[in-house]
Each structure stands twice: as structure tokens, then as C-alpha cells.
Image 1 (cartoon, helix red, strand yellow):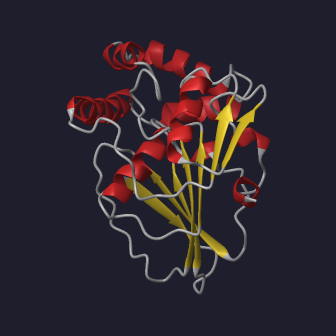
Image 2: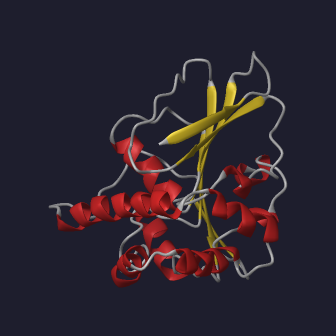
Image 3: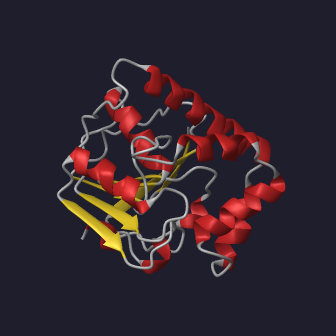
Length: 228
């Protein structure tokens, strides 16, 4: 995993921990205002589970995860590598990203990986953004190399195939999600599959956003709106 810390103050003891989606860059959330008393740790690139962070300066950590970031956060939680958090919000994601009932259907997931090219990548980005209306984000997504993001997706596929073949193909995670946001018109992870997943997690607040696509951050201007 890669990470980048945005410090608001040398004395800050509050942290927003954000796990980004597959193939994403920070531009996905760069418009969100960070509360002055918080730092922001942006995590992305899930080719490994390695994440070395000193959590000790922070007495309050709020978790947000988007898309494949939900899977990444749950993996770290199961491995005991995630700190205690005061709130956890999931956006358009599940802990089983490759799953016929609770994630992206297997054939579609494998087809995306096997056929990933520069041209197909543009089509995926359009589906994720809900078209070309988010021009700044659409352009920013080209920053990461196709070979890199294919390796990232390949690793997720490999781990998910292990899960599906295991004795317990739907493991729980020691992570209590407070809120799950679902885009009603999500063209990446079907909304009904997200609903099915969150019902198994006992999430207290499951909100389906009418007309919402896979990318919902354009509906927010501040991080606090996610957990408020």
C-alpha cells in the first residue's frame, strides 16, 4: 500500500483515515475540506497489505473507505493492523469485491482484469464517474500506469479467489461500520449486492443515494459530511 499524510497542525491528535478505490488518485477527494483539527492519511494501491503507520499521536481516528478501499480496510482489521476508530463510513464498496451476490459478479470482475487495456480503462472510468461530467477526475485517473493498476486488480482477484475456495468464504471482520452509502445507479458494484453485503454486517445506517453513481464524492464538500 502507498500512503500520504496531510498535516494540518504539528499538534493534531485527530486523524481522518481514508482508503481510496482501485486505480484511484487523491484527486477523487481533493475537493473535500479537511477540518482544521484533523490530519488526513490517504491510502491507496492494494498490491500488498503492508501499511506502516505510527498511530500513537492520534487519540481520535475516523475511517472512510471507498469501493475497493472497504475490502482493504477489512483485510487490515482481520490482520490486527487497523487502529481503533471512533467512526467508520463505507462508500460504494463491500468486503467481498469479487462476489456474485455481494460484490462485482465473478465473470465481470475477471473479464475486467483479463481485458484491461488503455481503451477499456477509459470505459471503466466513464462508468465509475457516471459519464464525462467529472472532467477533472476523468483526466486525473490517467496518472497511474495501466500495468500498475492491472497488477493491483490482479492481486485483489487472486486474494478473492482464495477466499471463495476457503472453508469460510464469507469471513467477518472486527470492524464496526457505522454508515454505508450506496449509489442507486452504481455501474461498478450493483446496488442490490451492496445492500446484501451490508445487511450481513449489521450496519446501523445504510443509505441508498437516489441517482447516485459509483462516485459519490461530488455530492459532498467537507469530510465531516460523511460521518455527520
